[in-house]
Length: 124
Image (cartoon, rainbow, N blue to C red; front, side, top):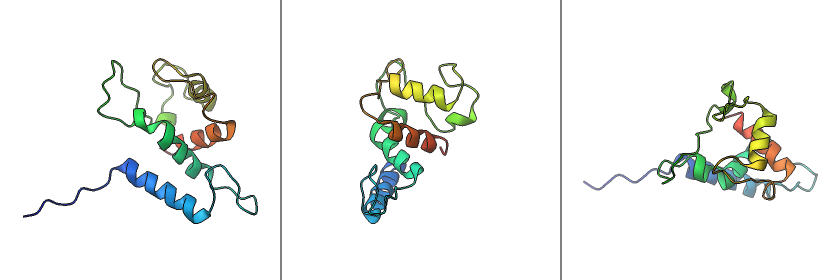
């Protein structure tokens, strides 16, 4: 009996959906369309997450002394894994300044991308 085809992982499926959304909308993730419309913040935030965060925070096979925390349900907790309050301001600070083995993204992400990422993290 032939082996069943492998199903794409959740990250691959989500990335494909985001790419399809960008294609259908006819614009880049951070640009406005002809009328100045932008893709929904959660959609853009998802793409930012996939490009910058998921490689570590969703990985199961990283060979690191300390594993990055999973971010699902991040804003359902009272505190972050660091012990800091689970607030937009604290998560924004962690994204921009980095923490532990996580690099800072201050030079990588602009303010709108960080805001969109925060909106997306609220949906996980």
